[in-house]
Length: 175
Length: 455
Image (cartoon, rainbow over all chains, first blue to last red):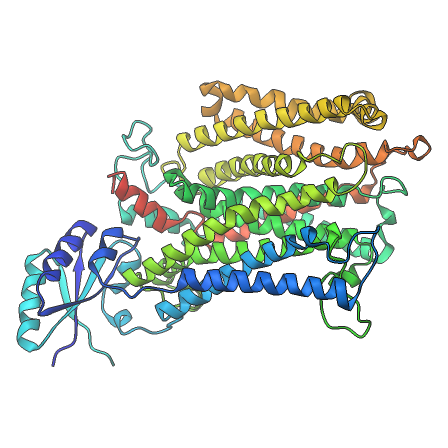
């Protein structure tokens, strides 16, 4: 069994066209694409799981804000009640500032953790990094990773990739 | 150094001033200065800024050792340079996140060339701003009392105190800004990892790039996170500077009890921050030969933002004077008269000239397109905004309710240290930054070039 094929394209338009022509063929699996800048069209072509980044941020933001408010309420009303100019102990309007600030930061931090979680980063080694020329994926070249069901379809895939404009097709084998 | 991208003002694309800006050329233009040996001017700038760092450290040590009595603060003007500096620096720090977040949300393409270094500016400015209230405490060793932590004294922070609000605002904003900046930096760190030839560079850039491969899934997750953070960042920025405004407005002093303070502080912050962006953009453009990436049109739009802000500032000042008179309180009317004619009147007139009158020149397209004029106006705005911050403190505190308490602030040499030395420190940090990290967001530029059909 051969591994997935990594095809190199000179520009995003050719890559998109190639991905579209692979998409309609059920015997090929479109695995991933690698580009030096975000190409929105690819997101519709390459299937992706729903990421829970926004939901995580929402949850973390609100729960941290609630915690911060509860902490203030407890410390001002129960833990360390202080009569400051006759103000009520539970001066809730001024207690809203801290929850707002820390809530937003907590949302951002949770979002970052969710990003790492959903993308599998940090990943200090990736078999693709061994492919000659793959370092251009972060600079000026466009890559498509696809696989076939078996050796025969993989051969067909290689041919198809060639005809759709790939300048180089490499087989990726996990070490 | 020659520009890798050949700048051409007549090029059809609005935000890239070149007929052709391919991925290779953009990457080359941004990364080449990082791999080349630092130029003569960089070394000169670093050598000039280094003594200021030493000066700041010496000033900090001396204030910590001797106490804040070395400043010109007295029993009436209890706030001085440290608080004014804090407000000014955090204002500078405002523009980075605003440029990055607000312009991202409103899909302004021109942000691509300036967002990275504007955000770096934010980080350094907010860090310096955070230093100031701690120094001002007088007992910096107890700064951690602002945080709620389990302690044997069963003591809790006073949540109704503006100082505690500042603590949370600064720390949340600083950490948020670091994260926001780092998230959009990861793809460019991967580019650096793939281009550098030195082992140390590969290790460090590689570790910080987290194994980024530019996969569609990575980009998708990054976009979701980045836009969501931008949406959170805008209210955060506004709230941070509003809290700074509340530090004043929550008090009972004449001239400070104004509901206009929070929005007026936010606009003032944007104003000084954008002016600083102009200065840094001109420096980076010239130093790294990025004439094709940071174009005359960028300065033109920033000039418009500055003009708009200066009008809002003028309106805010006028509102202050009007409300001082219209409210009818004797102390408020007396304060307005003191602003115009009192001890600090020359500084007040300088403030009005720098912030309101001079920037009106930006109505003329010729001025907005002249880099020398824009640079001069940006510096004047920064000076004017600093004067505004210091006068907000001085005027009110020198001219409160009780005439027997009217005292004037006198600058000491250590006050001066806290005005000037942080500027050198900021420059020092910025010079280090531009040598280590791509000052222009490369992936944003590539996307821009493809959208503008010049790639």
